[in-house]
Amino acid sequence: MNTFEFFFGFYGLVLGLSLTVLATGAARVFKLRRKVRLGWLTPLLAAFVALDVTTFWGGAWSEFKDQPFSYGLLVISLAIALVYFLAATLVFPEPDDNVTDYDTHFWANKRTVLSLIILSNLLGYAASILVHWFTDERAVTIFGTAVTAVPFLLLTIPAALSRRRWLVGTLIGLQVLLYVISATLLAWNPAWGDPGDTTQPSLEAGLADE
View 1 (cartoon, rainbow, N blue to C red):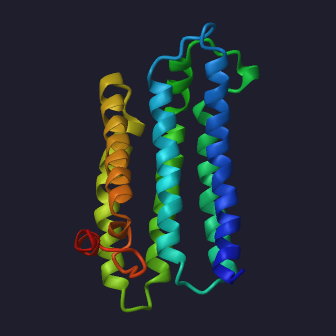
View 2 (tube, rainbow, N blue to C red):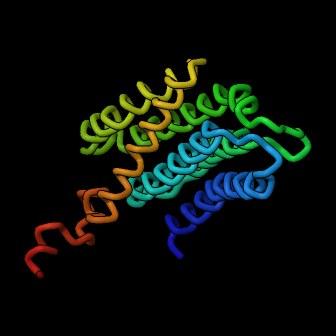
């Protein structure tokens, strides 16, 4: 095991806890489906958080795989993962909360959940720029980060602040749709996710082989 595998194993473990919390909450809701009013807002928020965590997980691999291991990088990654975990724990109510209407829980926690997701992403953007600051890839990294951050923030900040059901649902739904489209495209051609990775077969090479 090299140093990056050690780092990413630790990082993946902590991020994986967030997905575990979401899966546990979803399973609990499924068991109580005849006793509670679930609605569609909480499942939509859960899908968004799960996809954002997964996307960030994959992005961390691409961004940090060539970086030297350091304690600072480990601490920053831990902070990001813990913020994600806090967000994940608020998506579904706890059994002791005795919630029968999940829309009520959604409106009570939506702003906090989305604010924590925004914070996680901002920390991730900062970490990405920081590790490339003294390299030849600084300008490319800043540009790529801006291209990713601007649409994310334009959709997520209004969703966090708004109290209009249709607007919140539309904004979060667009985020989920973008993640699903991205996942579909990358499943078709993984090389698009990391253009600098020459170990992935290109689309042209795949067509040539056929």
